[in-house]
Amino acid sequence: MFRRNHLFYVLVPLLFLSCGDKSFVPKPRGFERIEFPEHVYKKYWLDNCHYGFDLPVYAEVKADPYPLAEECWNNVNYLPFGATLHLSYRNVKNRDDLFKMLNDSREMVYKHVMRADEIVENYISAKQFHGIFYELDGSTATNAQFYVTDSTQHFLRGSLYFNSRTNQDSIAPVLNFLKVDMLHLIESLEWMK
Image 1 (cartoon, helix red, strand yellow):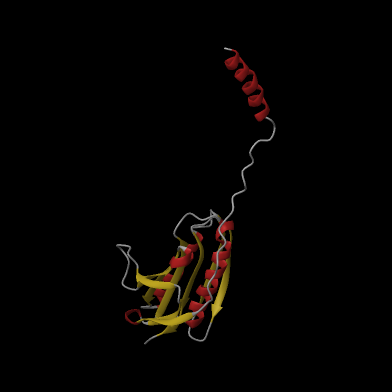
Image 2 (cartoon, helix red, strand yellow; image 1 turned 60 degrees about the vertical axis):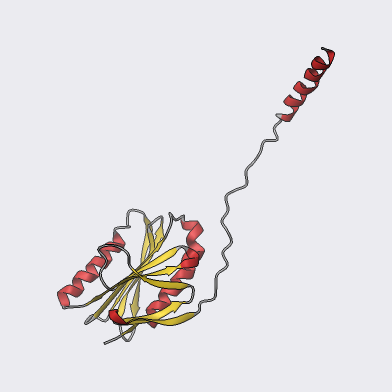
C-alpha cells in the first residue's frame, strides 16, 4: 500500500510539471525545392494540323482526350511539373470566322476576371503572325493563355493549366519557368501550307 501511494505522490507532480507553458509549435508550411532542367528544345511537327514548334525535351504532346475535342486539339504535358498546355488549332475560313475565334479567345480569358487580381495583355507581333499573350494573376484556374494567327489561314490558341488546385505563391517559380517555354513555342511557331 505504501508503494502505491508513494508512486501516486511522485507521478502527480510530474504530470503537472509536464504541462508547463512549453507548448508545441508546429513548423510553418513549406514547399519542396524544385530543380529546374535547362530549357532544351527539339522541333515538333503536327503535320495533320499544319504547324510546328520547338518542344521542351521534358514535355510530350498528346491528342486532347476530351470527347468533344476537335482533330487539331492537342495537349503539351509538362511531366515534371504537373502542368498541361492545351493547344487548339483551327483553319481560318473567312473574316467572320476569324473574328469569332478572336472573340471566343478573349471571352475564355475574361471569364476568369472574378478570380483574377489582374489580367495583363502582351501583344505579339512577328513576321508570320500576331496575337496576344495573357498573364492572369491571382487564384485563377489558368495563369497564362495566348492566341496567335496569321489572319488568313491559321489560328492557334493555348491555355496553361496545372493538374491540381493551385496556390499562387507555390506555383510562381514553375509558372515563370513554363512561361519561358510558352513564349519560346510562340517564337518558334511555323505554319505549313
